[in-house]
Length: 104
Length: 104
Image 1: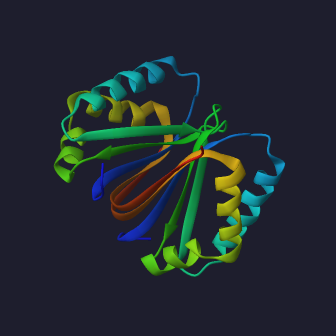
Image 2: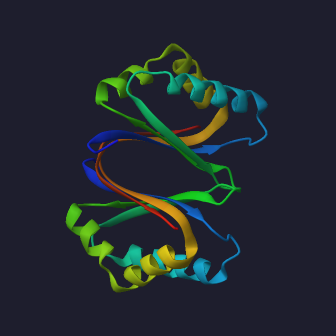
């Protein structure tokens, strides 16, 4: 995918890393995201202290807005606020430039 | 910091997580970044499999360009390509919108 495209940076701090309900919710949500029109990709990382980030990439802002209001995503957002996260930040970005390196 | 500002997404896969030279280099580099004009902040995460991301935030694209060419950063970039990483991606983004949540 050539820029410009869009990234949603979801930085968060998980209350309980052994929350099986959360793990299932995340897994299902990821599968749903992958099916959305305009979806490009997703990467997700978490440190041992519970802080992590999920970045999803989208072709346009319409796709970002649609995913924000997706029914299963709304349920997950509520669970996130009420149970899963002590805090989070969401940043919507336009990716304007990129390069990739791979070691031979 | 209110948007718009800029984010550099550095996704990478570390060859050897026990590379002490890399760990020192990263720590020094982070201290250098924090001193640069236009620096806003930095977040960094790594999964147990060695895949991780560092995101640095900057006030403007001039600051991004200056940091890219900073002498110690250039040394680190070379070590990254030659030794530390099996692959990486760099994405430069404009942050256009954000919101934050904190649980009481």
